[in-house]
Image 1 (cartoon, rainbow, N blue to C red):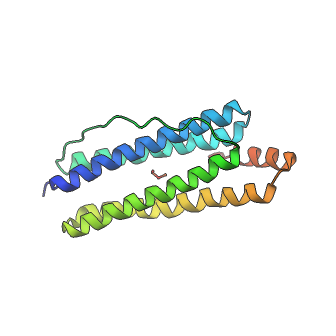
Image 2: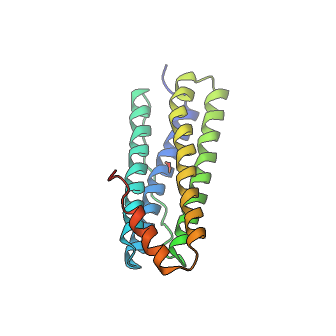
Length: 165
Ligand code: OFO
């Protein structure tokens, strides 16, 4: 069965959210690079790539269900923060915002009796659990490190290992 118009519209809106997320994380990476934290920037660049794959996953699903993908303009992302810690706090808050969006989509799919979309969205529900956990763990590490320059240097190194183990 083809997607209902309501679901199609909501999934298209989520494609934009995922691209906005990618764009926001790229902006965060650029800020972190400018502040000479290559490890934090690398982590954010990897996060940006993940968001891109989320958008494409939705794009493929809409097409598979006979829907029409319509792209919206991207939101201009914030470009400055006060510290790397603030960047990761903002990333955590953003993931919580995205989790709410996914939950809304699940509710909509349920109300529309669209089992396939509800099942498809389960992957995103699980992904959000992971993304909230990973960003919030990093925020905890920043709090632990506090003002220590050494600690910050080590944390930057550690996050720069993302994808290398
Ligand atoms: Fe960060 O999970 Fe998609 O948006």
